[in-house]
Length: 537
Ligand code: N01
Image (cartoon, rainbow, N blue to C red; front, side, top):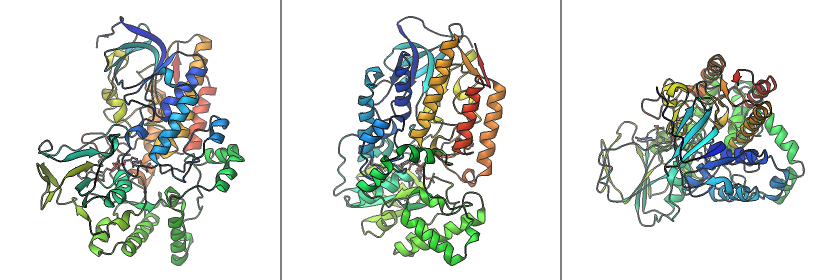
């Protein structure tokens, strides 16, 4: 395809970074420090990325706050005091704002500006990037920090435009307060966003209908305030704490028992599960070492969950509907607070839409195949075109005008997740093909930010202007990513990890599940080996 690159009315930059979340901000920080000219384009009016948009009631991180934060600056991690074990969305946003101000990043961020397209100019070896403000920017490097869960999706129901009530979506929640009082509210979805918001909405609404198609595993978060003692203890040697986390499988720390489910008797096993339930949150995954590898071991968790839900939820039919019937850990484990308990409230109804699916919306509410629900408000908690959607929603054209949509038609092809053959000087951070969502996103942001910054510095000192992954390196790495996915039970059910929640999307387990340490080692080896697997010129 012929190149259609405009060359007038542009600014010249070393790098354009897309997105002012954790990833984009750290990338900008590194580039600023190295003296590269760089600019972030961010569609929101402020920093935060996914944490800017997901401001629905109860939004909270499922990684502990002392770990879900930057570690590049000892001063920063010493001066910030996290309040709770799991930080709430407002607190995380406050933290990100603090970081942006402290490291003087906002001067190089253009807010409320969306990157619509990026086209590689083969002659000049740079990218022409167009925004929705009709601005052209020419940059040597095009770097995406667009996030894994930032392309919201919403099912298109017949009659959606007829509904007269209020409509919200958890992933693009408004800044103004939403008043639930006295209202009949329907929430569609039963993933993490619904799990976090349902218990809080239930306390306000007249009646809440939860439209559930697939039940999830919800472990109590056991959130609490952090004591001075535990904060001080970590801060007294934050470096070692971080190093220990970094050496673990997911780059965040929680106790993992190196035992099979079947190493313990049924009584001891139940005791272990009970202990993990009390610890709460994602650490439940560390109860045994074969939960995500062995089907029989995995079934033991489902049995435990059934028993637990049966004890909490009074109505056996509701308990049964809430009991997951997929592999534990296959969909991302949800951490909630009083989620199952909420279904004991008289003003909460669980509506099973697995068989009697949502048929249409009407001016007065929602109709399933078997019933009608009069509603004042509908909330979509229906998830994201995860991992690749935030990339493929930008019109990116690489060598020969090939689009990223064409390139990734059968699933994401990357080298180390970072780079795509045929798309020189483009980097895609903390996304498909790297541990990303399976590790701590903030730690991933720093590891990728450092890798790219070092790479750009390497190129600058040697006078290179173009870097591109070879097809061979890309296909080898992509095969490794796919193989690791296939080996895990996590790829065996429908989920956003495999893209099955988006109609027509190729089913591929997108993040790299081979573990954080081997991934970091591989990235380092590539760099140490003069960017092995890349062509530089
Ligand atoms: O999205 P989801 P989410 N009719 O895709 C349902 C992160 N996150 O926003 O499973 C009826 O998990 C769909 O049903 P089904 C976290 O990584 C983190 O909740 O496809 N239902 C599902 O129940 C998380 O995993 C936190 O059958 C329909 C729901 O919508 C990820 O974001 C908090 C439907 C979507 O669930 C995504 O979570 C929040 C239809 N037509 C989010 N279409 C933290 O704790 C879809 N659904 C950090």
